Amino acid sequence: MTENLAVTVLPTPLAAQSLATPFASGHNAIRLVEFHGAMTPHGFDAPANEIAALATAAAAHDLGWMRRVTVRGEDRFRWLSGMVTNTVNDLPENGGAWNLVLNAQGRIQGDLTIWREGDGLDLVIAADQYEKLTSHLDHFIIMDDVELVAHDPAAESTIGLTGPQARDVLARMGLPAPTEPMTWQRVEWNGHDLRIYHDFGTLADHFKIGTPIAGLTLLWRALSTAGATPVGAAALEAFRVAEGIPSYGIDIAERDLPQETSQTRALHFNKGCYLGQEIVERIRSRGNVHRHLRQLELDGPLAKAGTELFLDGAPIGSITSVTELPLNGATRRFALAMVRSEAEVKNQPLTYVAGSVAGTAKILDKPPAL
Image (tube, rainbow, N blue to C red; front, side):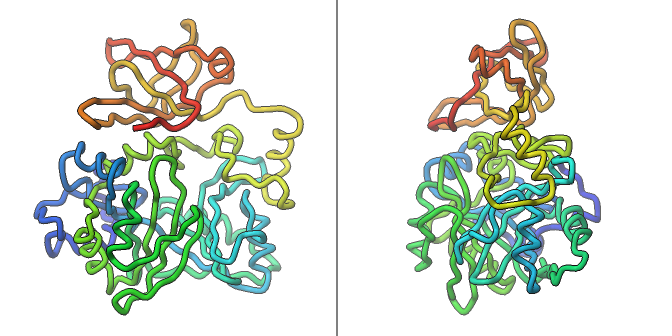
């Protein structure tokens, strides 16, 4: 997340509306930052209040940087299955799956989520990956009856609703909450066709609500009235690290192999051939990778991304994301890091230095209780 104000990075529809009129939260001065390829609100309140809403209550947040692409054509299922790492043909009619997109060498080119509606298929891609991934996918439409149809980001947008009380907020608005993660449904609300997705999360429920632009302000205000606290990109990014959910371009890079990310939820080993599948299968059947992305809890100063980790005085990895959570009157620090396998085998605290102060880092085997 940066404060890059380049003219090529446009505000999300929600952020653009806030430039003309104050948000419903009552905050007149909203600072925008670049997040996933779009300008979005940095925050609305004190960081501790926004983190608390995500972790213990319900938080509404801008997801206007998401882009939706419909895959059409007779060959869409077969072709798309050959382009991504997770199942396509076996998706339930109102189900979804997170996927990695690989090149022929098995290196990760990006990530996206596929949602199925009957026989329809939608891709949801972050704005900062949109051009690269759609170009990559389009390159492999050769003799296939397949068309990628982008939905106009000026005509629709998405709002997130996260937290253990998110279902209660939806109920107060008269909206359904899909029960199982990675499922979704359509609903008409105040004359607007909404798409309500139940996405993946480890510490709280994550819902995403797609809406026509005409219903965006009404939806945002209704969420606030129903008890959701508006939160910005800073709190959302901090909570992501606490949940141990990696972000492409930050924790996952082009050089990485799928198994190095530890994200087995993005892989399906019985779906058949796909681009890069030979490398993935070779790793699974013949051996393992020598490093993994792991979540850490830090005991010591707040480190920075790129900080080196040590085991018994020898370099063992480096931090990719780090956050500090002020919660329940205490401060806890979490990180994601790419570490060598020896660190996991020995299961000993790692060391690091931030400035001139040393600290220790513990590898977590599951997301923490907050």
